[in-house]
Image 1 (cartoon, rainbow, N blue to C red):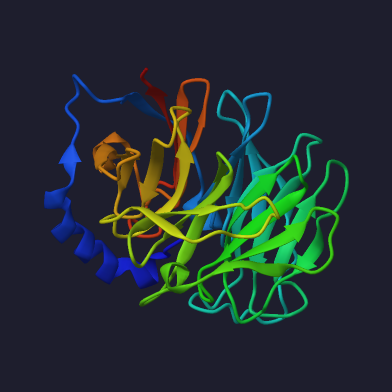
Image 2 (cartoon, rainbow, N blue to C red):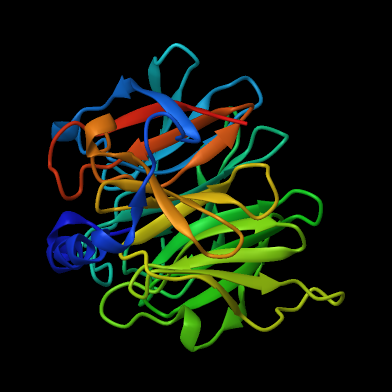
Length: 314
């Protein structure tokens, strides 16, 4: 997550780094046929920060500064499902305003999101269950910035990154106290935002560090504790959230400097989508059945927040 007001310097750095990133040719690109399937209302602050996919092909999104959770149907129709309560006075670190970040969709239809307001009464993990009002299930420190969110449906654990404190929390879907699950220098911010996107994959919690431009892997031990943090890729300024392609450890990562990179298991990364394809500050990625979904929040471009879809080649 990098809102426009804080990303100008990072965007400039990304331009300097772009020479080291190889752009895939149209003939060999693993991602093809990009097209925008939904446009959102910037004037209404409909800026999609994160995405989760439902079993019916719907995309569930957080509209970060509108404090909303929305559903985009298979044909692009957008429906706002819920809005989180506004704080009396938002004092969110780094942002100054309320921010809905990560999202996860459970098998029972419950949607979980992170919410940061800078106030103790609202900051934390929220649940939105079908037919019910949103409610907070776990508090998180008000002086932090809860951001990415991943759900382990098997154990009922939720993993949350905090981009200000540079840690990964773990909490239960049943509620209760959230605890620091992983910490360390690799997760810490250097200027603005540290630990950011988060996904569960092959016995580990994977995350990114936005300031350091890295992809990190944290093994889950047999006791459920965090193993040593491993750096799996570097050199990706303003990296945000990501998704695995279904081919081992290969993943697609959104970068706020208008790129989506294909990241190989050995750390090599290649730009496969750019602004020319319709990206407008992409924030996250989802993959299902050969389709790639990329929300763009327009934090930097200040135009056309949207949802892009593309075909993932074999």
